Each structure stands twice: as C-alpha cells, then as structure tokens.
Image (tube, rainbow, N blue to C red; front, top):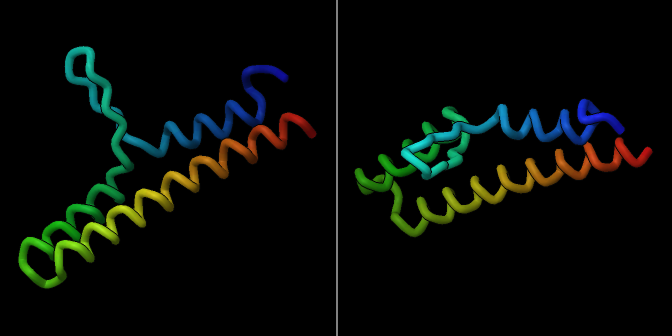
Length: 84
C-alpha cells in the first residue's frame, strides 16, 4: 500500500498526539500537553500531602501505561487495515 495508507495515518495520529522537545542532539518525546497537566496536578497533590507519593506514582504509571497501550492499539489497527 502507499505511504498514505492506514498505517501511516495511525502513525500520524500517534505523533500528532505527543510533544517533542529537542535539546541539541537529544530528542525527548513527551505526552500531550493535557496529559502533562494531569501528571503535574497529581504531583502537586502529592507535594501538598493531599495524596501519598506511592499513590501518585501508581496513578502516573497507570496513566502512562494506558497512553502507551492506546498508541499500540492504533498502530495495530492501521496494520490490520493495510492487510485487509
């Protein structure tokens, strides 16, 4: 299939839904701004002792795992569409 196929579309959605920071030769992919704000909010709640640090860590890790799984599902969906 052409480079404009379903797989390319899925990759575009995934890459459009992230924030890339470049510092010299270093390239760092961050989650989208709204997710960074969510994680910062969890950090603030932990810093103010409104929630415990282990709970904040579990929330942050769970949130990142869900985001990672979403990207994987989109890639697999694009691949399946190309095979169909």
